[in-house]
Amino acid sequence: MRARVVASQNGSVGIQAALDVLTLGGAAVDAVVAGLSLVEANPEDRSVGYGGIPNFLGQVELDASVMIGSDLSAGSVAALQHYQDAAKLAQMVMQELPHVLLVGAGANRLAGEMGLEEKNLLTPETEQLWKDGLEGTYANPEFTDYLTKMRTLIGTVTSDPQLVERPYGTVNFICQDEEGRIASGVSTSGWGWKYPGRVGDSPIIGAGNYCDDRYGAAACTGRGELAQRACTAHSIVTFMRFGLSIEEAVRQALTDLARLDDPLRGEMNVVALSREGEPWGAATVPGRFYVYQEAGMAQHEVRQRVVVPIYEAQEPTM
Image (cartoon, rainbow, N blue to C red; front, side, top):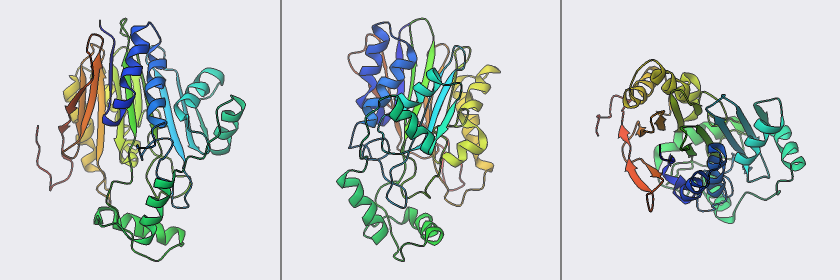
């Protein structure tokens, strides 16, 4: 079997590094962390790590998780502040502690104890974007209701902000070595302008991230609350366990979201990998992509995700 990596589109900056770890004989989880770490360090990515869009109070809070498919080991951190390397810290939780998930001050404390570099995660660009959102200088009405509700809850501004870009995003990595061993990982700064302390699906094992060598792996981006309510990543792997193809498993898990009431009509995107090494990407809205690379490929491929609509106004497409 060839070593391979599947990632969300923004994982393109780290996919070669992840594959290099695999081809040099490294562990799949180390490959996952290598890929995630480069995305976390990329200030051009407004949804992960350094330069992520902050919460409503202007604080960048990071969530991440990693998982090993051979024995279902996992580690997660949530609401981490002042440290860029959320994926590395999640791996440290898995390796150094008898726990799976650390949050907030506890996650910050461990980061310091493990010698991770403390850093101001708010770049001038994302600070200005955050201020523009509060002051209403953007022109996309898609998230107006969301931010209006946040203003009501927190009570700090009275303008009517509108955004030109989606205030959320995440990066997924799934790596498989030549022996078929799988690891997966997710990192995010969560929804922009979120209520302080909000935790999405990314650090929740079974919601935004899950892998099992016997069946495959899946990871999610998008409206994390949907994945939390439906255990989407675990569902995909479970459906493969009970005989569905990877395409059938992904379609079924996304279709299950249609019954969830969501006033934001949030989107959900997934990447998945079967135990045989077949990659798959799908989204509930059009225009979403993922990246794939395996040993022997000179560079990664950008592949379009299959659309699985969950709202009545959407039409199914390939």
